[in-house]
Image (tube, rainbow, N blue to C red):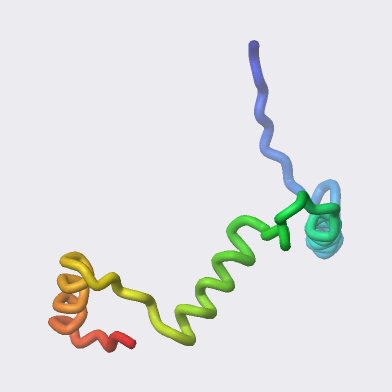
Length: 85
């Protein structure tokens, strides 16, 4: 089976602002769809989960495990004068 891939310019078909609006509408439709039992929320990959994690890390710092690897990470940070929270 053969496949042909052609590079296309999105602007030739749709205005950029309208494109973004359609993306947002699609995400809203997916997030507001019926969820399976036990599912509280539908998260958008590479968007919401990472933003939430970044906000927690910014507020609380990045957790360092307290094992041999964690101890080595602390020593590495101290050698480079990196403040750990």
